[in-house]
Amino acid sequence: MPTQPPLLLLAGMAQSGRYWDRFRPWLDGFHLITPDNRETGEAGPCPEGFTIEDLAADALAAVDRELGGAFTVVGHSMGGMIAQALAFEVPERIERLVLVSTRPGRSHEVPIDPSVLAPPAGLTLPDDPADAPRAIRAAYYEKYMAPGEASRKIAREEAERAHGNSAELEGLMRQIMAMSVWEPGAELRGLDTDIAVVHGDLDSLVPYGNGEIVARLAGVPLVTLHGVGHMVPWEAPDELAEVIRGLQ
Image 1 (cartoon, rainbow, N blue to C red):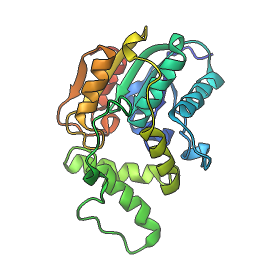
Image 2: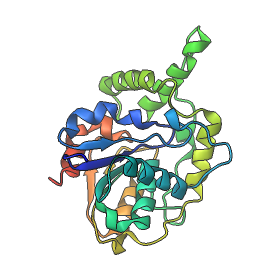
Image 3: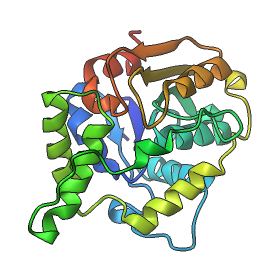
């Protein structure tokens, strides 16, 4: 059994557990569990489809393969929806719930502007078709972060890291379908656990209003990260680590 406090990290849409690799240095002292969601990494395709609750069950199974008892869970974007479903399913297991850049469920959420999903302006594809997936992924990563050279550099590095283990188009669509129909099975305010809600005020992929709603439903103040886009673990690792450690 691990002696360090267990921390389950749930990645967002299209991302495998490797999404958290950049953030790992800020989590020294935790026993990290970073499962691959269906359609990514070692989890592989799931053509029959699935629900957010299915992904929550997968995450719990990943925890139980390593340890028993209670743990902290951090969910980013789609991972935040999975984290909520997991907390509703096994509230007695969740010591702390940290919801980052996520949504409150179909009936409450602030919808996305469809233009946000359009190809980034100025996207040019490389001459070698084999390099196109990396270029497209990097362009979208950059689009969803705060503008600047730092975001551009992170986007290129993370597109390379994600190559070969993130969701392909069909799998991405199945993840989107699961998110589009998800409704919480209970109320966050009714959970007997410590909850933190974090959102960047420049988030275009999951509009900031969603963070306000999640925080209101949980009955907690929203931790607003000013000048930060959607990719909070990459853009604001210091601030997020403080929240996880209960310092904010």
